[in-house]
Image 1 (spheres, one colour):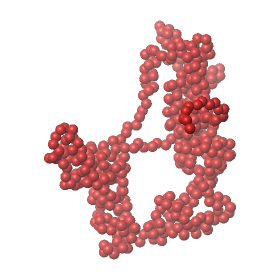
Image 2 (spheres, one colour):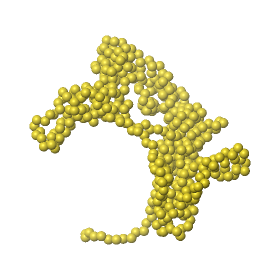
Image 3 (cartoon, helix red, strand yellow):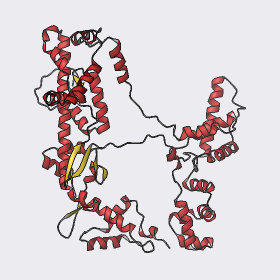
Image 4 (tube, one colour):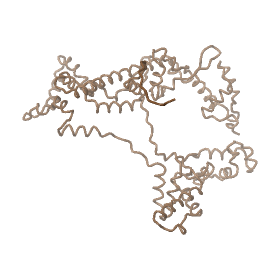
Length: 504
């Protein structure tokens, strides 16, 4: 068969998503802080958008109420007008901006006052990042009396310490890496590699001891046992038995075999448990205290308040820029005869984009309020009585009731928070599967986890509840649940098994 090129015509239909629809979905997913930044950026790039100031909101109301002003209010208004009125020798028309000329010149604004204003607008406050664990260790090493050779070795150690504070490789790998660097430096300098000053294991051991003496205690440990031992070394409490348990009976400690440890150490089980309690107070990941990651601040997108026995839903959008179409640019754009085809295309695209953005913001507000109103109606018992009365709810149920697609509800609830009388909660908190009860009703899985957590907190520490005992207690309350489900929920709550929770 002979290969070749050919052309053909085919008629077909296909669906393509409008780019604006992608942007609308992104806006629906954006949490409050991201939406603020997005709208600020749109204000910079689209001249047909302008910010609605508080004074603009009051213009209409002030005009209607002018006839009803009291003499004191009129005097105050006259004073305020005098404060903003330009000096008599200055012509007010000279201070006005010729917007038509700016539009025709490609929006190139000249003049000192406006340039200074725009320069201030671009200045955004940013958080100061922390130096992190490695930077903190370098600062401490700079205060020690170390030779340049030791500092080079110390830098190799710091580069191999993970964020949680552990040494990520053994000493042999560190020596191989730094000695290979010594060889590369010698070759680049044209030196003989036969008699190079390689680093030795003795130097590595000595530097490891220096690293172990730095803050936070436990940094540079090679495993959990060494990390805990280093922290106990810095502890001021009497931890002789705790140190012995870590050194000789670590596996039994992990398994909570208090009686066996007591028999081997010649002490009582109560003393062993007291020593284990001291170990439990130590930090298994000391490096995270110096983490360079920034704190994540949560700003609720919605607010639920109880007013006169009714739960009302509000959007927390006071800090979101309120946008509207610029009246000045609309007036200029109406006279299309003054513009070139390029200007007309630019004006049309920016005007349509501005109109669509305002509509998308309003649609986002409407959708979020619809979803939250349904959640409040469905979960009223939770707001009144607590998490144990949380009802099962799925995204599909919400979508069917409010007449939207399930993916839209998922975007609305993704990374969103609501401030309620019971605290600031993620919207995903209200969605969970259900378990049938003997009475035919469904109980939220989150509520059952809370019941299990309360049962464990109220149990007798000498006779902790087993998973089967929890199953029987819940069954008496009408909740039918399998033992493996209780074990799964217990693991999600980070609760140990009954044998591990037992105290003597």
